[in-house]
Image (cartoon, rainbow, N blue to C red; front, side, top):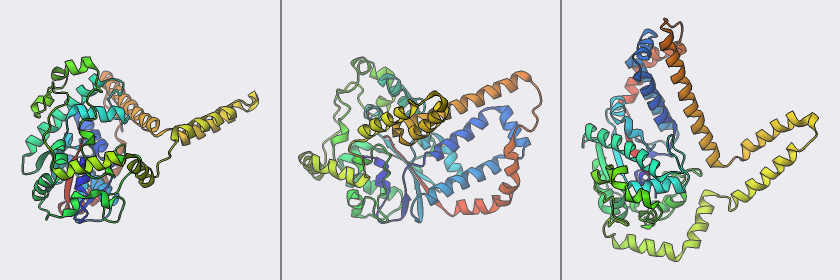
Length: 396
């Protein structure tokens, strides 16, 4: 179950759509620009001051968050890892609050690997490397939440939210100054309904979100992690202990669930086929996507096996067809690889500029945007102050 979906209140004071994917990237891009003193100086010389950049990024984020979901008085973004730049988000949106969803890192990594969730820098073939990456990311977010302060960042443990939904939902709503509504305990009744819980067909955990609150996800990782990684867990991921998890407990004792949550879990197990069918229906999932892809790929190969004279044309057509039927995982991996390649190219270009030690000429084409940004700066700042932004950071 995706914890951040508890933030999509059906009482509709919030708009909380699917993960945008672009907001963390624009925030990371800004961080990349400012890491270099020379790059920062070039931006200043081009008229891209801190105020101009903040105004542009804030307006960009606000436009994405406001328009990719339904209209609501409060806006919610639930992109993972956004809290890594939490202090900067607070600078852009002073009224923002964060729900820092914390989950046992072993469960998080198992979910990422088993569901093949592509995240830049994560090697899905290595539990050890993914645990190390998780540890680094969660450490940064933990520090950010601490620095932001309890008034603006509330830490919520996924396991406790699942075990005791009403207790923790009351705490969350109080933190957000939102009145209580029993509907938040029955999100499964509002899947893909107006002012309800919108689901994406490509988010890896959507098939779990359609179910009522249950315990199934708490222990799926047990006995799935390689023995050598389990043995070294305390050293690989010291943040487990910092967050209160026992790195040597397999399985750990998260606590006793509320009776109705246990009852939900028993009913799910007894009607597993029914819920699998419902997942396919709600998400319109193809029951045999691999078989279809295999057939399509075979057809593509038949197109390739034509006479030599037409090979170039056939190959181009074949590539177009493969792009259309490429499995979702490969598409995401390709996007991530392209992003990494782009960052490497930028780093190489920057290194070359440093070696040349020459004054750059017209290196920042973004200067063309300066006049528009300056004209909109005042109105953008006013708009930002009029919106309340809620960040919901979750583990997969």
